[in-house]
Image (cartoon, rainbow, N blue to C red; front, side, top):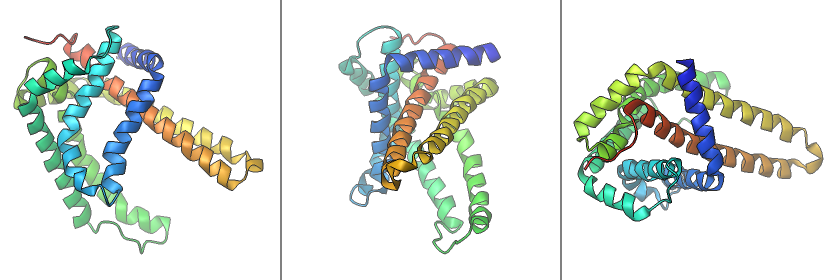
Length: 249
């Protein structure tokens, strides 16, 4: 198991090293679509559309790393044709994502939502820890069902139900190495951020504004890299668990 995790991590780092600039761009684009658009008042109306498009965007990202791994040039027309052929089940999966996002929002606001009257950490912890726990418990089976399902729909020609069942089965069987790999990447990201915060805080001669700018820039770049590595991790684990990505005719 540890050897499998080690191989996954090594493969992820190799692919990321081969595509640093492209990966940072893809990570930033993902942040823009799924983080910045929903919080900007002018663009909030597009939030439901981005949720429906999530499986399509995942496939474009994964296909880029697949082509990189196979040492082929990325052909957008090819992936567009694949997505067009499998449009219905992917769009149905996007609809399931929309239903899940609606459920999460309902649970969050049913528990009181955002409360600006909270003035201490203890109050924050008391109010939001139970909500966060509920959201995590709700999210775990959803992430298990959607970790591999977009790839299974396109590359294996599975229907929606079969892809979700297979994704659940794959993540359940390999739950420990998957969780361990995710924990290593996430823990490394957190450690890097903490060390960077300490480093920039020591540069007091630059002034508070400069330190804040540099730290924010580093956090943004690090987060985009982390997002891209998770996409690579998704591709690598799919390839190992379900075999080579050979598109069925």
